[in-house]
Amino acid sequence: MEQKGNVKSNVRRVRLSLRYKLLMILTLIPLFVLGLYLKLATGLFQEDKEAYVYDSSVAVAKSLATQIRVEIESYLSAVKPIVEGYDAMTQSMSASSQDLFTRFPRLGALILYQADITGGTTKLGELVNPSYRNDKLLSDPVALDQYRLAVETRGLLISADARSESSLVIGWRIGNLTDPTHLIVVGIYQAETLISTFTKAQMYRNFLLDETGSVALGSNQLKGTPLDGEDLKKFFSPVVKGKLPESSFGINNRKGETALVSYAMVGVGDLKVASVVDRRQALKAVDALVAKSLLFFVALFAFTVLASVIASIQLTSTLRDLYEATRKIASGKFDVRVRSNSNDEIGGLADGFNVMAAEVSRLMSETAEKARMESELATVRTVQETLFPPSENQFGRIQIVGHFEPASECGGDWWNYSRVGEKIFLWIGDATGHGAPAALITSAARSAAAIIEGLDGITPGKALEIMNRAIHETSRGTINMTFFLASIDEKTGLLTYANASHDPPYLIRKPEGRQLSKKDLVPLMDVNGRRLGEKLGSTYEEATVQLEPGDDIVFYTDGIIDLQDSSGNKWGERTFIKNLISAATGGHDLPEKMSFLRRSISQYRGDAVLLDDITLFMAEYKEAG
Image 1 (cartoon, one colour):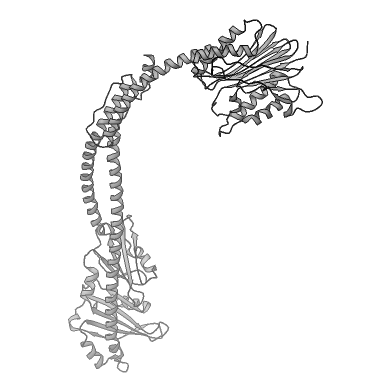
Image 2 (image 1 turned 120 degrees about the vertical axis):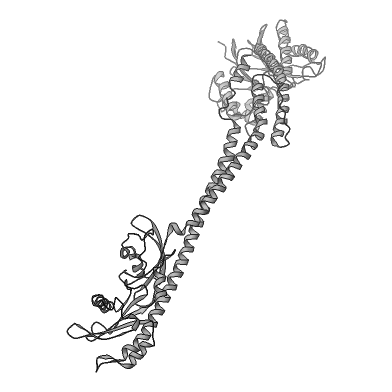
């Protein structure tokens, strides 16, 4: 119950439902995409519209510039022969000039002045169309004189006179200012259509600018336009400074409002035609597009929200059931199932959950059984640990140091030492495989050894015969055990041994006056017999060897030889012998030799998993005390 409670407390509480998260994703992403699209689309449309306005205004400016140039050239071509007909003798216009004048009805008046060497100016004469006799400009000598001065200074003057809606003043200087007798011609020209083009209210406000930036032709009705209240000469300064034949750009007025301005050079003097349009007025279509797009955006967003709500409910209803079912499983209720009628991934997930729940229920039962078995194995391991002697001991002249490491919870190796009468018995065996079955065989071997230790006059060969019967009766021949049993007479140093197909131990002789080599390792392999438990009634021969003070005997199981590193490479007998020689060299005592071997085994193995039990122990026959 305590475990279930801990599992339940670890289930994360839902703070924000997946349904709402999905709803937010399904609505916010389209909202962002549509908003971005609206911004990009309106931006591109605005740029395209501005480009169109610029192109249109440039076309208007070029058209007016052409019209102005044609009018001026037409005027000059008509005036030139009239002026050339001036009679210097009579200091008046000749009859031919007057005749030419009458043939050009759009020329309302023509006044001719001549400069003199004193710097003054003399009026030579004038020709006036009868319909212009009452023209206010002709009756205003001050205004005429101002026009004359302007023509004298600039060389060419075009100006719409405020006194008339159809009269255009065109002045022309014949000769340079350095010529003291240059002529000045001031004409009143009828250009009603041309003037109306510059003065009538329309989307494009058109202006004829002279070289100073002053407005020669243009509307005076500027209220409600970007030019309302502006100093036009200052406003048009970028146009005057323009060096290109034609161009377009935006100019901000003093209120910060932007006007789209295009200009074109007339090609006569430094005159330029400027066409101005209010940016806000030009982009009204963009505003209309934005308004319609916003309405479409709102409608589409509302539809998206509705579709998202329906989709999120359908998608998350089964997921919600899965979540609730998961919480029940976390609380220990494994019989819960989830229903789903959908044929998509969610339905598949529900089916998978049901299968998982059934599998978890089965695994829980197996886990309980496994826990019971592990508990039993732990008990077996605890019991098996009692079968092994302390890792270090000494019996008079015989010192013993051992090492055992099982490959699993229970091992199939067993080693021991004991005093039997006047002799020290050294036991080592390796049951087939490892784990619980092998551990039971080692228990049988230990039990048999306990009985053998109480027998008088027992020898290694007879002891193996008894152990063979005990193991065969225990396993019925299904599990065998290799075994090596030796006895050492403490007083004489005579070693007697018998072998049941076990790896022979090595007798390490102490060399005299030279370094230890492989030939000093003598395998005890003079006799050998069947494995224990393999056949009932097996007998085992014995062999003897005389120990000298300082001799070591190394007992081991095949787990030492089959030891593998993390790459799967075996340690092997050659490496084992090499490490035995290194451990025995240098005059170390027996515990230090065993520590060296343990370190070598650990370093070679690394983090590799043991495939078999490792058992190794050494016995040293010492000098008499």
